[in-house]
Length: 96
View 1 (cartoon, one colour):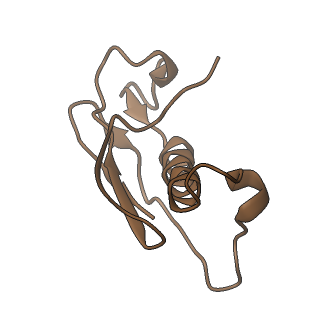
View 2 (tube, one colour; view 1 turned 45 degrees about the vertical axis):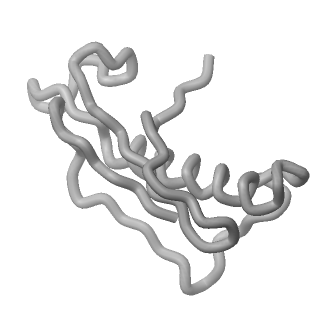
């Protein structure tokens, strides 16, 4: 089973950037029982969402002729962090 961890691409510019959003709701299968009694989308899943958006940017920029797994790598200057998960009802945006 695959999870797409974003719901809509808002903006895409070939070779430059892509912005996508995720609508977090209580019906998400991967929220499970949550953390400390709260159902949240964990930071690790938010990072996965960022990676998915970056992968689609690679596909989109190359006119879907290359695989994002073969074409992308994390360089020494790249960094990403999530300080806390996204609560239900929130709408985190990811950009690549």
